[in-house]
Length: 629
Image 1 (cartoon, rainbow, N blue to C red):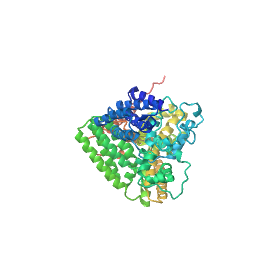
Image 2 (tube, helix red, strand yellow):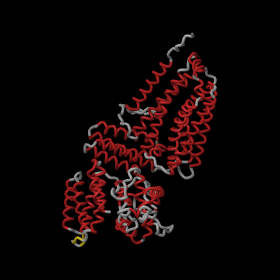
Image 3 (cartoon, rainbow, N blue to C red):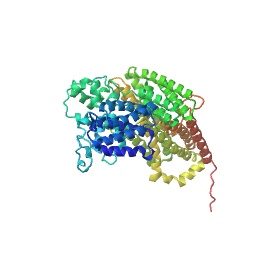
Image 4 (cartoon, helix red, strand yellow):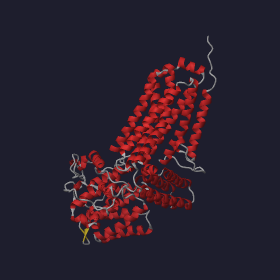
């Protein structure tokens, strides 16, 4: 198996101009295998296996070539490694030098050696059953139903060298890179989080038979970073108790989430580290890499806790987001390194302040009620205004069947929002980028439909046009396609707000003190009652308006909402990294109006405003009546 591994890794290192980080991961992967397998080639200065020794020489040669991006001292160590293999030194000497080169490679290539959240072993168990069990077997012993026909055989994770010598970080690299020419493929379709989950799960397979007692607890001094980067053997050297008591090691591997209460994933610490990487990359002249690190600092470090932060200090949360956006805009614009470094320092100072804010006690019952009530009221009113505008027009026209489709659209949106929340909690993990992209794209889709709706309503404001519409077009509303369009708009507008509300309420639930879930539920119900009352009043009031005025005001309303939504949509795509950020020379930000101080978002709002004006004027043109024959 190692021969296949070596040959394919060498091919991978030179084919298709692999990305530098992939080369770095490949380098670390080779170093890990060399440290583990050298003892099978040389003992006491003598070659005990010619085939294994030949592989070690090839490993060393490949490591030397892959070390070209490291510092001069590390390149010299890589050359020394090849000489040590030729001299047939002991395995301990090889391991010591490999450890130094590996540390340098991880730092230079800025490889992530641990996840930012605790592994979800139940999720990994499902992935293993679906992707790995057919070869490795249900218990990971390499005896799956497809194993008999494979050469070499799949890895048995119960063998001592794998059970105790493999770290999750090494397993992560193997899952990412794969081993072509064997049954081990590269699982590039797995997310970073899923890959880490699976890497941790593999090390639990050999621990399944260990008996655990309820009073066993893992030492709080063992953190997630150590559990991810160290093998069982390495952990036992640092923590001798793990070697003395096998049950404790089983807890370390099988129940790492038990540490979560004492060692929550520190997203802000991840953001600080990643910002330093962005600064280092920028100082080296790699602007694109620096931008990516700055983006990851926000999406994976700040965005996951942004709602909790906003629940405690909304003003600070907005200021932190603006600061990180400003820093990223400096990188994208190629500003002087001094300015970028200063922005990084300011960002890190704010992250430190944010950490202090988050350490404050949880939300009180009363505050949880107020926040949940405000969230639903704010998000719900945005959707209700559009739905009311549609229903008012349809009631005036007497097309009751179309009204049912509109109601069906927003009801389906609420159900879909709840289903998405349940599915995300059960099967999926939405990263910051995915959430922002979903919100942004839904907002922009709603803008297109809103503009059409606004133009359609305004085109009916004159009596002659309305009469022509009634006589020639009203029948189309009874057709399925036309009603589907109204239902689609209703669905999009409400689903976006439902999705955003679920995110906020989930965060409030996590931040709340014990027993606040009832208060959150009461806030949600109270908000729905208020929204329902307002909706009824608006519908009753709309009946008294002249039809032309109803259309005119409704079309004006949806045009304004289109301008607001396009600002929100562009801002969301900027936060996801789909669009660059170019800051305006002022810091005014009005979330309610979707107004953000960037050229892209304001430019998009101006464009949509002009489109609305053009459509408004075009729909106001005099009606040309065909002469009767």
